Structures are given as C-alpha cells and as structure tokens.
Length: 106
Image 1 (cartoon, rainbow, N blue to C red):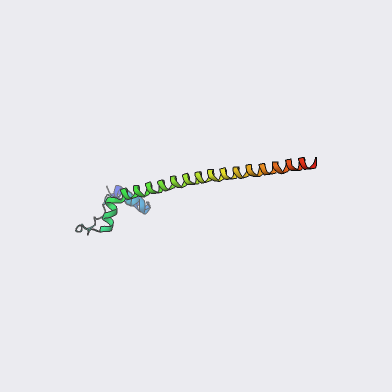
Image 2 (cartoon, helix red, strand yellow):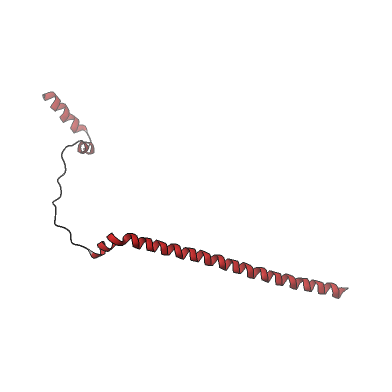
C-alpha cells in the first residue's frame, strides 16, 4: 500500500499542471447564485427582435443592389445606343463628303 501511494505521488509531481487538472476529481466551486439580473431594455430589444431586424436590413440591402445593378444595365444600354447612333451619323456624313469630292473632282 505504501508503494502504490508513493508511485502515485511521484507520478503527479512529474505531470504538467494542465494534465493534473484534467485528471482531478475535484470540481471548481460554483459561483454564488445571485438574484435575477435587472432587465435591460436595450438588451431585451435585440434579444427578441434581432432576427427580424437583421432580415429586414438584409432584404433592404439586396433590393437596393438589384435596383442599382438594373439601373446600371439600363444606363449602359442607353449609352451604347446613343454611341451607335452617333457613329452612324458620323459615318453618313463622311460618306456624303466622300461622294461630294468624287463628284466635284470628276
């Protein structure tokens, strides 16, 4: 019996502190139970309404992004249409000048 106690005693001395704590059977003392904490209105608001608020904000951001991208697409299509019209008018003007030179030089 003396030998077993002695071996256990030397084994615990050689173990690192964290291993001794993991193998310990002693539980840490429980903190004293206090009375019910006071209600905080700010905390209660977010405790019960945080998900709906989060979902509303998320839907609002998504809607904004969809409208923004749609507006950009329409604007780019309009710009492209305007540029193509401008190019057509410049090309027709160049053709008229080129035909005027040919008919004037002949």
